[in-house]
Image 1: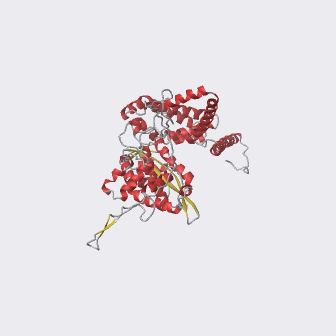
Image 2: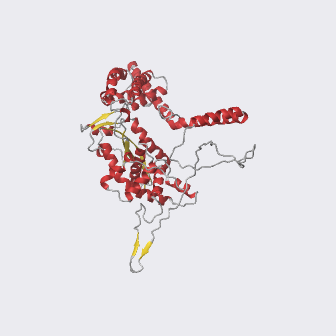
Image 3: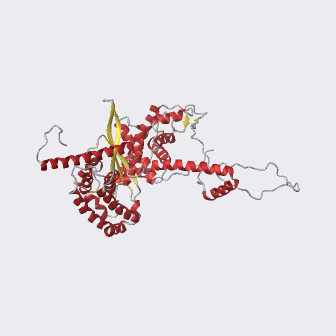
Amino acid sequence: MSNPADPLSNDPIALQAMLAAERAENERLRQIIKELQRHRFGRRAESLPIDQLLLGLEEVEQVEAEGLAAEEAGDPAKREDRTRKRRANRGSLPAHLPRIEQVIDIPDKICPCCKGMLHVMGEDRSERLDIVPAQFRVIVTRRPKYACRSCEEVVVQAPAPSRLVEGGIPTEATVAHVLVSKYADHLPLYRQSQIYARQGVNLDRSTLADWVGKAAFLLRPIHERLFERLKASGKLFADETTAPVLDPGRGRTKTGQLFAYARDDRSWGGIDPPGVAYLYAPDRKAEQPLRHLQGFVGILQVDGYPGYRALAERNAVSLAFCWAHVRRRFYELAQSGPAPIATEALARTAELYKIESEIRGRSPEERRIARQERSRPIIDAFEPWLRGNFALVSQKSKLAEAIRYALSRWAGLSRFLDDGRVEIDSNVVERSIRPIALNRKNALFAGSDGGGEHWATIASLTETAKLNGVDPFAYLADVITRIVAGHPQNQIDDLLPWAYAPAPLKAVA
Protein backbone atom coordinates (compact mmCIF):
# COMPACT_ATOMS: atom_id res chain seq x y z
CA MET A 1 0.00 0.00 0.00
CA SER A 2 1.36 3.46 -0.87
CA ASN A 3 2.23 6.02 1.77
CA PRO A 4 -0.45 8.76 2.04
CA ALA A 5 2.32 11.34 2.34
CA ASP A 6 3.80 10.41 -1.05
CA PRO A 7 3.01 12.93 -3.80
CA LEU A 8 0.51 11.73 -6.42
CA SER A 9 1.56 11.41 -10.04
CA ASN A 10 -0.11 13.45 -12.75
CA ASP A 11 0.10 10.57 -15.22
CA PRO A 12 -3.44 9.11 -15.77
CA ILE A 13 -2.04 5.65 -16.51
CA ALA A 14 0.04 5.69 -13.31
CA LEU A 15 -2.97 6.90 -11.34
CA GLN A 16 -5.10 4.05 -12.74
CA ALA A 17 -2.42 1.53 -11.77
CA MET A 18 -2.23 3.00 -8.27
CA LEU A 19 -6.03 2.87 -7.96
CA ALA A 20 -6.12 -0.77 -9.05
CA ALA A 21 -3.40 -1.65 -6.54
CA GLU A 22 -5.20 0.21 -3.76
CA ARG A 23 -8.47 -1.55 -4.57
CA ALA A 24 -6.77 -4.96 -4.53
CA GLU A 25 -5.12 -4.18 -1.21
CA ASN A 26 -8.39 -2.92 0.27
CA GLU A 27 -10.17 -6.08 -0.84
CA ARG A 28 -7.47 -8.18 0.78
CA LEU A 29 -7.75 -6.22 4.04
CA ARG A 30 -11.54 -6.53 4.00
CA GLN A 31 -11.17 -10.28 3.59
CA ILE A 32 -8.78 -10.45 6.53
CA ILE A 33 -11.19 -8.42 8.69
CA LYS A 34 -14.07 -10.75 7.78
CA GLU A 35 -11.97 -13.77 8.68
CA LEU A 36 -11.01 -12.21 12.01
CA GLN A 37 -14.68 -11.50 12.71
CA ARG A 38 -15.60 -15.08 11.87
CA HIS A 39 -12.74 -16.33 14.03
CA ARG A 40 -13.88 -14.17 16.94
CA PHE A 41 -17.65 -14.34 16.64
CA GLY A 42 -18.54 -17.09 14.17
CA ARG A 43 -17.93 -20.72 13.38
CA ARG A 44 -14.33 -21.78 12.94
CA ALA A 45 -14.93 -24.90 10.87
CA GLU A 46 -16.61 -25.63 7.56
CA SER A 47 -19.52 -27.24 9.33
CA LEU A 48 -21.00 -26.97 12.77
CA PRO A 49 -18.75 -28.95 15.17
CA ILE A 50 -20.39 -32.22 16.16
CA ASP A 51 -20.14 -31.49 19.89
CA GLN A 52 -21.90 -28.14 19.42
CA LEU A 53 -24.52 -29.78 17.23
CA LEU A 54 -25.16 -32.42 19.89
CA LEU A 55 -25.51 -29.74 22.55
CA GLY A 56 -28.19 -28.09 20.48
CA LEU A 57 -29.97 -31.38 19.91
CA GLU A 58 -29.90 -32.10 23.63
CA GLU A 59 -31.84 -28.92 24.34
CA VAL A 60 -34.42 -29.70 21.65
CA GLU A 61 -34.88 -33.25 22.94
CA GLN A 62 -35.26 -32.06 26.52
CA VAL A 63 -38.01 -29.64 25.55
CA GLU A 64 -39.74 -32.36 23.56
CA ALA A 65 -39.56 -34.79 26.49
CA GLU A 66 -41.05 -32.15 28.79
CA GLY A 67 -43.97 -31.65 26.42
CA LEU A 68 -44.61 -35.39 26.13
CA ALA A 69 -44.52 -35.75 29.92
CA ALA A 70 -47.16 -33.02 30.23
CA GLU A 71 -49.34 -34.79 27.66
CA GLU A 72 -49.02 -38.14 29.43
CA ALA A 73 -49.90 -36.59 32.78
CA GLY A 74 -53.22 -35.41 31.38
CA ASP A 75 -54.05 -38.39 29.16
CA PRO A 76 -53.68 -41.93 30.64
CA ALA A 77 -54.32 -43.52 27.23
CA LYS A 78 -51.34 -41.74 25.67
CA ARG A 79 -49.18 -42.68 28.65
CA GLU A 80 -50.08 -46.36 28.26
CA ASP A 81 -49.49 -46.29 24.51
CA ARG A 82 -46.04 -44.69 24.83
CA THR A 83 -45.11 -47.05 27.68
CA ARG A 84 -45.91 -50.00 25.43
CA LYS A 85 -43.77 -48.57 22.62
CA ARG A 86 -40.86 -47.97 25.02
CA ARG A 87 -40.94 -51.58 26.18
CA ALA A 88 -40.89 -52.79 22.59
CA ASN A 89 -38.01 -50.56 21.43
CA ARG A 90 -35.65 -50.19 24.38
CA GLY A 91 -33.53 -53.27 23.59
CA SER A 92 -31.66 -55.41 26.11
CA LEU A 93 -29.07 -54.39 28.66
CA PRO A 94 -25.54 -55.90 28.45
CA ALA A 95 -25.32 -59.43 29.86
CA HIS A 96 -22.10 -58.76 31.79
CA LEU A 97 -23.72 -56.21 34.11
CA PRO A 98 -24.52 -57.58 37.58
CA ARG A 99 -28.20 -58.20 38.27
CA ILE A 100 -29.81 -57.32 41.60
CA GLU A 101 -33.27 -58.81 41.78
CA GLN A 102 -36.21 -57.18 43.50
CA VAL A 103 -39.32 -59.28 44.05
CA ILE A 104 -42.59 -57.37 44.36
CA ASP A 105 -44.98 -59.94 45.81
CA ILE A 106 -48.57 -59.93 46.97
CA PRO A 107 -49.07 -59.68 50.75
CA ASP A 108 -51.60 -62.53 50.96
CA LYS A 109 -51.39 -65.84 49.04
CA ILE A 110 -54.91 -66.97 50.00
CA CYS A 111 -57.40 -67.21 47.12
CA PRO A 112 -59.99 -64.46 47.53
CA CYS A 113 -62.63 -66.83 46.10
CA CYS A 114 -62.24 -70.27 47.71
CA LYS A 115 -59.69 -69.41 50.38
CA GLY A 116 -57.27 -72.04 49.05
CA MET A 117 -53.50 -71.51 48.61
CA LEU A 118 -52.37 -69.71 45.47
CA HIS A 119 -49.47 -71.14 43.41
CA VAL A 120 -47.01 -69.41 41.07
CA MET A 121 -48.04 -69.71 37.42
CA GLY A 122 -45.47 -67.32 35.96
CA GLU A 123 -44.12 -63.81 36.38
CA ASP A 124 -43.53 -60.52 34.62
CA ARG A 125 -39.89 -59.54 34.45
CA SER A 126 -38.47 -56.12 33.61
CA GLU A 127 -34.95 -54.68 33.68
CA ARG A 128 -33.91 -51.08 34.33
CA LEU A 129 -30.47 -49.56 34.25
CA ASP A 130 -29.26 -48.44 37.68
CA ILE A 131 -26.09 -46.51 38.55
CA VAL A 132 -24.06 -46.66 41.73
CA PRO A 133 -21.89 -43.51 41.98
CA ALA A 134 -18.13 -44.05 41.85
CA GLN A 135 -17.27 -45.86 45.03
CA PHE A 136 -13.96 -46.12 46.78
CA ARG A 137 -13.04 -49.29 48.60
CA VAL A 138 -9.97 -50.47 50.45
CA ILE A 139 -8.15 -53.65 49.42
CA VAL A 140 -6.73 -55.21 52.57
CA THR A 141 -3.84 -57.55 51.79
CA ARG A 142 -3.05 -60.03 54.56
CA ARG A 143 0.07 -62.19 54.55
CA PRO A 144 0.03 -64.65 57.43
CA LYS A 145 3.37 -65.56 58.97
CA TYR A 146 4.06 -69.19 59.89
CA ALA A 147 6.59 -70.50 62.40
CA CYS A 148 7.76 -73.95 63.34
CA ARG A 149 7.31 -74.97 66.98
CA SER A 150 10.45 -77.14 66.79
CA CYS A 151 12.69 -74.73 64.84
CA GLU A 152 12.39 -71.40 66.56
CA GLU A 153 14.24 -69.41 63.88
CA VAL A 154 12.05 -70.52 60.95
CA VAL A 155 9.42 -68.01 59.80
CA VAL A 156 7.65 -68.60 56.48
CA GLN A 157 5.54 -65.96 54.70
CA ALA A 158 4.31 -65.46 51.11
CA PRO A 159 6.28 -62.68 49.35
CA ALA A 160 4.57 -59.32 48.99
CA PRO A 161 3.28 -58.70 45.46
CA SER A 162 4.98 -56.02 43.40
CA ARG A 163 3.23 -52.67 43.17
CA LEU A 164 3.44 -49.72 40.84
CA VAL A 165 3.78 -47.35 43.80
CA GLU A 166 5.77 -49.26 46.41
CA GLY A 167 4.72 -48.22 49.89
CA GLY A 168 1.86 -46.16 48.40
CA ILE A 169 -1.88 -46.57 48.74
CA PRO A 170 -3.18 -46.90 45.15
CA THR A 171 -3.97 -50.13 43.37
CA GLU A 172 -3.09 -50.37 39.70
CA ALA A 173 -6.78 -49.88 38.87
CA THR A 174 -6.80 -46.62 40.84
CA VAL A 175 -3.84 -45.30 38.86
CA ALA A 176 -5.48 -46.39 35.61
CA HIS A 177 -8.60 -44.47 36.59
CA VAL A 178 -6.53 -41.31 37.17
CA LEU A 179 -4.84 -41.74 33.78
CA VAL A 180 -8.07 -42.24 31.88
CA SER A 181 -9.75 -39.35 33.67
CA LYS A 182 -6.87 -37.02 32.78
CA TYR A 183 -5.98 -38.11 29.24
CA ALA A 184 -9.21 -39.60 27.86
CA ASP A 185 -11.88 -37.68 29.79
CA HIS A 186 -9.84 -34.44 30.01
CA LEU A 187 -10.10 -33.94 33.78
CA PRO A 188 -7.01 -32.16 35.16
CA LEU A 189 -5.53 -33.63 38.33
CA TYR A 190 -6.66 -30.77 40.55
CA ARG A 191 -10.27 -31.41 39.53
CA GLN A 192 -9.90 -35.12 40.22
CA SER A 193 -8.53 -34.23 43.65
CA GLN A 194 -11.64 -32.15 44.32
CA ILE A 195 -13.93 -35.00 43.21
CA TYR A 196 -12.20 -37.48 45.52
CA ALA A 197 -12.35 -35.04 48.42
CA ARG A 198 -16.15 -34.96 48.18
CA GLN A 199 -16.12 -38.64 49.12
CA GLY A 200 -13.79 -38.09 52.04
CA VAL A 201 -10.64 -39.29 50.26
CA ASN A 202 -7.98 -36.59 50.43
CA LEU A 203 -5.48 -37.07 47.62
CA ASP A 204 -3.29 -34.08 46.93
CA ARG A 205 -2.74 -33.10 43.32
CA SER A 206 1.00 -33.66 43.73
CA THR A 207 0.31 -37.21 44.88
CA LEU A 208 -1.76 -37.89 41.78
CA ALA A 209 1.00 -36.35 39.64
CA ASP A 210 3.50 -38.75 41.22
CA TRP A 211 1.29 -41.70 40.25
CA VAL A 212 0.96 -40.42 36.68
CA GLY A 213 4.73 -40.01 36.32
CA LYS A 214 5.43 -43.54 37.56
CA ALA A 215 2.79 -44.98 35.24
CA ALA A 216 4.13 -43.04 32.24
CA PHE A 217 7.62 -44.40 32.88
CA LEU A 218 6.23 -47.92 33.10
CA LEU A 219 4.20 -47.58 29.89
CA ARG A 220 6.92 -45.90 27.82
CA PRO A 221 8.19 -49.17 26.22
CA ILE A 222 4.65 -49.94 25.01
CA HIS A 223 4.38 -46.47 23.50
CA GLU A 224 7.72 -46.94 21.73
CA ARG A 225 6.67 -50.34 20.42
CA LEU A 226 3.33 -48.96 19.24
CA PHE A 227 5.11 -46.33 17.16
CA GLU A 228 7.51 -48.94 15.77
CA ARG A 229 4.58 -51.05 14.60
CA LEU A 230 2.91 -48.04 13.00
CA LYS A 231 6.12 -47.05 11.20
CA ALA A 232 6.31 -50.55 9.72
CA SER A 233 3.13 -49.77 7.74
CA GLY A 234 3.24 -48.72 4.12
CA LYS A 235 1.00 -45.71 4.70
CA LEU A 236 0.58 -43.27 7.58
CA PHE A 237 -1.23 -40.04 8.35
CA ALA A 238 0.65 -37.23 10.09
CA ASP A 239 -0.36 -33.99 11.74
CA GLU A 240 0.79 -31.79 14.60
CA THR A 241 -0.75 -29.50 17.16
CA THR A 242 0.53 -27.14 19.79
CA ALA A 243 1.21 -28.32 23.32
CA PRO A 244 1.73 -25.34 25.66
CA VAL A 245 4.41 -26.15 28.23
CA LEU A 246 5.35 -24.19 31.33
CA ASP A 247 8.72 -22.48 31.01
CA PRO A 248 9.82 -21.77 34.61
CA GLY A 249 12.91 -19.81 33.58
CA ARG A 250 10.81 -17.15 31.88
CA GLY A 251 7.73 -17.37 34.09
CA ARG A 252 5.39 -18.17 31.21
CA THR A 253 4.54 -20.97 28.79
CA LYS A 254 6.40 -21.96 25.66
CA THR A 255 4.89 -23.68 22.65
CA GLY A 256 5.80 -27.33 22.32
CA GLN A 257 4.36 -29.64 19.68
CA LEU A 258 2.60 -32.97 19.71
CA PHE A 259 3.11 -34.80 16.42
CA ALA A 260 0.46 -37.42 15.65
CA TYR A 261 1.12 -40.42 13.40
CA ALA A 262 -1.96 -42.51 12.66
CA ARG A 263 -2.93 -45.63 10.76
CA ASP A 264 -6.49 -46.52 9.83
CA ASP A 265 -6.99 -48.85 6.87
CA ARG A 266 -10.60 -49.74 7.57
CA SER A 267 -11.92 -47.61 4.69
CA TRP A 268 -10.42 -50.06 2.17
CA GLY A 269 -10.57 -53.29 4.18
CA GLY A 270 -6.97 -53.32 5.41
CA ILE A 271 -6.17 -55.97 8.02
CA ASP A 272 -3.79 -53.90 10.15
CA PRO A 273 -5.52 -52.59 13.28
CA PRO A 274 -5.96 -48.81 13.60
CA GLY A 275 -3.69 -46.87 15.91
CA VAL A 276 -2.22 -43.48 16.67
CA ALA A 277 1.04 -42.50 18.33
CA TYR A 278 1.78 -39.01 19.63
CA LEU A 279 5.34 -37.77 19.99
CA TYR A 280 6.23 -34.65 21.92
CA ALA A 281 8.78 -32.20 20.51
CA PRO A 282 9.92 -28.83 21.89
CA ASP A 283 9.45 -27.14 18.48
CA ARG A 284 7.93 -27.55 15.02
CA LYS A 285 11.13 -27.65 12.99
CA ALA A 286 11.34 -29.96 9.99
CA GLU A 287 13.99 -32.02 11.75
CA GLN A 288 11.34 -33.36 14.15
CA PRO A 289 9.35 -35.44 11.61
CA LEU A 290 12.66 -36.39 9.97
CA ARG A 291 13.81 -37.84 13.29
CA HIS A 292 10.48 -39.44 14.10
CA LEU A 293 10.02 -41.15 10.73
CA GLN A 294 13.55 -42.38 10.26
CA GLY A 295 13.22 -45.77 8.59
CA PHE A 296 9.66 -45.23 7.38
CA VAL A 297 9.07 -46.16 3.73
CA GLY A 298 5.74 -45.50 2.06
CA ILE A 299 3.04 -42.88 1.68
CA LEU A 300 2.60 -40.13 4.24
CA GLN A 301 -0.70 -38.24 4.08
CA VAL A 302 -0.38 -34.74 5.51
CA ASP A 303 -1.67 -31.19 5.41
CA GLY A 304 0.29 -28.34 3.87
CA TYR A 305 2.96 -28.05 6.61
CA PRO A 306 6.28 -27.61 4.72
CA GLY A 307 8.23 -29.56 7.34
CA TYR A 308 7.19 -32.86 5.77
CA ARG A 309 8.67 -31.99 2.40
CA ALA A 310 12.16 -32.84 3.61
CA LEU A 311 10.91 -36.42 3.99
CA ALA A 312 9.89 -36.58 0.34
CA GLU A 313 13.35 -35.45 -0.72
CA ARG A 314 14.76 -38.70 0.63
CA ASN A 315 12.75 -40.59 -2.03
CA ALA A 316 11.62 -43.20 0.49
CA VAL A 317 8.48 -41.23 1.34
CA SER A 318 5.74 -40.04 -1.00
CA LEU A 319 3.53 -37.22 0.24
CA ALA A 320 -0.23 -37.30 -0.31
CA PHE A 321 -1.89 -33.99 0.46
CA CYS A 322 -5.28 -33.24 1.94
CA TRP A 323 -8.26 -32.01 -0.10
CA ALA A 324 -10.06 -30.95 3.08
CA HIS A 325 -7.45 -28.23 3.61
CA VAL A 326 -7.89 -27.03 0.01
CA ARG A 327 -11.66 -27.00 0.39
CA ARG A 328 -11.46 -25.10 3.68
CA ARG A 329 -9.67 -22.17 2.08
CA PHE A 330 -12.30 -21.78 -0.65
CA TYR A 331 -15.07 -22.29 1.89
CA GLU A 332 -13.83 -19.35 3.97
CA LEU A 333 -13.95 -17.13 0.89
CA ALA A 334 -17.40 -18.32 -0.19
CA GLN A 335 -18.83 -17.77 3.29
CA SER A 336 -17.61 -14.18 3.47
CA GLY A 337 -19.66 -12.90 0.53
CA PRO A 338 -20.23 -13.34 -3.22
CA ALA A 339 -17.28 -15.36 -4.56
CA PRO A 340 -18.14 -17.18 -7.81
CA ILE A 341 -14.69 -18.69 -8.32
CA ALA A 342 -14.49 -20.02 -4.74
CA THR A 343 -18.06 -21.34 -4.99
CA GLU A 344 -17.27 -23.16 -8.22
CA ALA A 345 -14.13 -24.66 -6.65
CA LEU A 346 -16.25 -25.94 -3.77
CA ALA A 347 -18.73 -27.52 -6.20
CA ARG A 348 -15.94 -29.33 -8.06
CA THR A 349 -14.44 -30.56 -4.79
CA ALA A 350 -17.86 -31.77 -3.67
CA GLU A 351 -18.02 -34.00 -6.76
CA LEU A 352 -14.80 -35.69 -5.65
CA TYR A 353 -16.13 -36.26 -2.14
CA LYS A 354 -19.38 -37.68 -3.48
CA ILE A 355 -17.42 -40.33 -5.38
CA GLU A 356 -15.36 -41.10 -2.27
CA SER A 357 -18.47 -41.64 -0.16
CA GLU A 358 -19.76 -44.16 -2.70
CA ILE A 359 -16.58 -46.24 -2.89
CA ARG A 360 -15.68 -46.21 0.81
CA GLY A 361 -15.25 -49.76 2.09
CA ARG A 362 -14.36 -51.27 -1.28
CA SER A 363 -11.03 -52.95 -2.04
CA PRO A 364 -8.03 -50.80 -3.05
CA GLU A 365 -8.23 -51.96 -6.66
CA GLU A 366 -11.95 -51.19 -6.93
CA ARG A 367 -11.33 -47.74 -5.46
CA ARG A 368 -8.45 -47.10 -7.87
CA ILE A 369 -10.51 -48.09 -10.92
CA ALA A 370 -13.47 -45.93 -9.82
CA ARG A 371 -11.19 -42.97 -9.25
CA GLN A 372 -9.53 -43.37 -12.65
CA GLU A 373 -12.89 -43.51 -14.39
CA ARG A 374 -14.78 -40.85 -12.43
CA SER A 375 -12.40 -38.67 -10.38
CA ARG A 376 -9.52 -38.24 -12.82
CA PRO A 377 -11.58 -36.30 -15.40
CA ILE A 378 -12.61 -33.88 -12.63
CA ILE A 379 -9.00 -33.45 -11.49
CA ASP A 380 -7.73 -33.06 -15.08
CA ALA A 381 -10.23 -30.28 -15.72
CA PHE A 382 -9.80 -28.69 -12.28
CA GLU A 383 -6.10 -27.80 -12.60
CA PRO A 384 -6.26 -25.75 -15.84
CA TRP A 385 -9.40 -24.05 -14.58
CA LEU A 386 -7.54 -22.98 -11.43
CA ARG A 387 -4.53 -21.79 -13.43
CA GLY A 388 -6.76 -19.78 -15.76
CA ASN A 389 -8.50 -18.04 -12.87
CA PHE A 390 -5.23 -17.52 -11.03
CA ALA A 391 -4.05 -15.31 -13.90
CA LEU A 392 -7.19 -13.17 -13.66
CA VAL A 393 -7.15 -12.28 -9.97
CA SER A 394 -4.90 -10.04 -7.92
CA GLN A 395 -1.87 -11.99 -6.78
CA LYS A 396 -2.20 -10.40 -3.32
CA SER A 397 -5.80 -11.49 -2.80
CA LYS A 398 -6.93 -14.29 -0.50
CA LEU A 399 -8.39 -16.07 -3.52
CA ALA A 400 -4.96 -16.11 -5.14
CA GLU A 401 -3.52 -17.56 -1.93
CA ALA A 402 -6.12 -20.34 -1.96
CA ILE A 403 -5.44 -21.20 -5.61
CA ARG A 404 -1.67 -21.01 -5.09
CA TYR A 405 -1.97 -23.37 -2.09
CA ALA A 406 -3.73 -25.97 -4.24
CA LEU A 407 -1.56 -25.68 -7.35
CA SER A 408 1.71 -25.86 -5.41
CA ARG A 409 0.60 -29.24 -4.00
CA TRP A 410 -1.16 -30.64 -7.05
CA ALA A 411 0.98 -33.77 -7.43
CA GLY A 412 0.31 -34.78 -3.82
CA LEU A 413 -3.37 -33.88 -4.13
CA SER A 414 -3.63 -36.18 -7.17
CA ARG A 415 -1.84 -39.12 -5.56
CA PHE A 416 -5.06 -40.72 -4.31
CA LEU A 417 -6.11 -41.34 -7.94
CA ASP A 418 -3.45 -44.00 -8.50
CA ASP A 419 -3.57 -45.82 -5.16
CA GLY A 420 -6.78 -47.12 -3.64
CA ARG A 421 -5.20 -47.20 -0.18
CA VAL A 422 -4.76 -43.43 -0.11
CA GLU A 423 -7.57 -41.27 1.25
CA ILE A 424 -8.74 -38.03 -0.30
CA ASP A 425 -7.90 -36.15 2.91
CA SER A 426 -6.11 -36.47 6.23
CA ASN A 427 -9.23 -36.33 8.39
CA VAL A 428 -8.24 -39.60 10.07
CA VAL A 429 -5.36 -37.95 11.89
CA GLU A 430 -7.26 -34.69 12.41
CA ARG A 431 -9.86 -36.66 14.37
CA SER A 432 -7.02 -38.06 16.46
CA ILE A 433 -5.83 -34.52 17.20
CA ARG A 434 -9.18 -33.43 18.68
CA PRO A 435 -8.72 -35.21 22.05
CA ILE A 436 -5.39 -33.44 22.41
CA ALA A 437 -7.08 -30.10 21.80
CA LEU A 438 -9.76 -30.89 24.39
CA ASN A 439 -7.15 -31.85 26.95
CA ARG A 440 -5.19 -28.68 26.17
CA LYS A 441 -8.34 -26.61 26.66
CA ASN A 442 -9.00 -28.12 30.09
CA ALA A 443 -5.45 -28.48 31.41
CA LEU A 444 -4.17 -25.26 29.74
CA PHE A 445 -0.54 -26.44 29.63
CA ALA A 446 1.87 -29.19 30.57
CA GLY A 447 4.17 -28.53 33.49
CA SER A 448 7.38 -29.36 31.63
CA ASP A 449 8.81 -31.07 28.58
CA GLY A 450 8.64 -34.28 30.59
CA GLY A 451 4.94 -33.65 31.15
CA GLY A 452 4.52 -33.28 27.40
CA GLU A 453 6.16 -36.67 26.89
CA HIS A 454 3.85 -38.23 29.51
CA TRP A 455 0.94 -36.66 27.66
CA ALA A 456 2.10 -38.25 24.40
CA THR A 457 2.69 -41.68 25.94
CA ILE A 458 -0.61 -42.13 27.74
CA ALA A 459 -2.76 -40.38 25.12
CA SER A 460 -1.32 -42.73 22.47
CA LEU A 461 -2.43 -45.80 24.40
CA THR A 462 -5.86 -44.51 25.41
CA GLU A 463 -6.74 -43.25 21.92
CA THR A 464 -5.50 -46.44 20.23
CA ALA A 465 -7.54 -48.48 22.68
CA LYS A 466 -10.64 -46.46 21.76
CA LEU A 467 -9.95 -46.89 18.04
CA ASN A 468 -9.95 -50.67 18.57
CA GLY A 469 -13.08 -50.78 20.70
CA VAL A 470 -11.17 -51.52 23.91
CA ASP A 471 -12.14 -49.85 27.19
CA PRO A 472 -9.11 -47.66 28.07
CA PHE A 473 -9.60 -48.15 31.82
CA ALA A 474 -9.79 -51.95 31.62
CA TYR A 475 -6.81 -51.95 29.27
CA LEU A 476 -4.53 -49.74 31.36
CA ALA A 477 -5.47 -51.41 34.64
CA ASP A 478 -4.67 -54.84 33.22
CA VAL A 479 -1.49 -53.79 31.41
CA ILE A 480 -0.03 -51.96 34.41
CA THR A 481 -0.78 -54.98 36.59
CA ARG A 482 0.92 -57.31 34.11
CA ILE A 483 4.05 -55.17 33.83
CA VAL A 484 4.34 -54.75 37.60
CA ALA A 485 4.02 -58.53 37.96
CA GLY A 486 6.98 -59.00 35.60
CA HIS A 487 5.60 -59.38 32.08
CA PRO A 488 8.44 -60.54 29.77
CA GLN A 489 9.98 -57.72 27.75
CA ASN A 490 10.22 -59.93 24.67
CA GLN A 491 6.43 -60.31 24.67
CA ILE A 492 5.60 -56.61 24.66
CA ASP A 493 3.43 -56.98 21.54
CA ASP A 494 0.92 -58.80 23.76
CA LEU A 495 0.42 -55.51 25.65
CA LEU A 496 -0.45 -53.34 22.65
CA PRO A 497 -4.04 -52.07 22.72
CA TRP A 498 -5.20 -54.03 19.66
CA ALA A 499 -3.85 -57.30 21.14
CA TYR A 500 -5.66 -56.84 24.41
CA ALA A 501 -8.61 -59.10 25.20
CA PRO A 502 -10.28 -57.82 28.37
CA ALA A 503 -11.38 -60.40 30.88
CA PRO A 504 -15.14 -60.59 31.54
CA LEU A 505 -16.21 -58.19 34.24
CA LYS A 506 -17.31 -59.85 37.46
CA ALA A 507 -19.79 -58.49 39.90
CA VAL A 508 -18.39 -57.70 43.32
CA ALA A 509 -20.67 -58.61 46.20
